[in-house]
Image 1 (tube, rainbow, N blue to C red):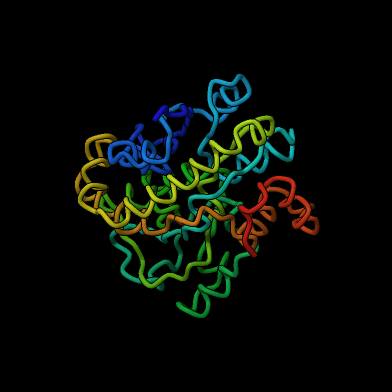
Image 2 (cartoon, helix red, strand yellow):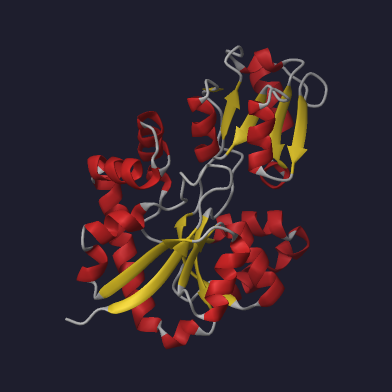
Length: 299
């Protein structure tokens, strides 16, 4: 059987020393022969930098790009040049990571909590701090809003914040440095659609069959990664050089959030749109129908 080749690109999370990819399942799927079984030969390549990945999509060097939803949605709103084939993770709630000297939420009195501005927008953080610890936000606790998750991580590590609301991969990295997770913490801060599968609009008809085969194979690959923890851990260690503790956390607390349906949840899309372009929130249904390929949206 002749195989159809698709070039897939992805990036590492900024500031992770090229050690953390949003979706690491492709390498395992290639090894397990899953794509080949579906008639595909997949080139799975790391390309760092959102702009460089868009350049490769536009030039035809790549067919599919794995990218964080807020970047892919903003690019679509600006250009209308791309479409979303699906979403490998709809939701992955942030952790509250604190200095090891802080044992519970009430210990944050007089302290600084860092968070990226977008995910904090519209979240009832003041209510949570008051109800769970009797703390008044921006009175007893200072919330410092930043432009990026990496900035929040660096503020915590640098000792300029005593706690940070962080996406799980950054939270894992902070824990490796001796910081600790506050449990329980409600799943209220999130980065909706953290892994979208994007392609140029021009390819959606030209490669419709190939993309359908890819989606079927990638669904199977995500299920395989979840069901074969030992193999997933081996690939994370060998391919990305993660230390054992980080490998375990990635398998137990991150890969479990991956969605093998690859469908885009409309409620999560609405949340994302309210962060990226709040002035257009009332037009969510129309934008979703234009951005997300037919059959890939649920809700």
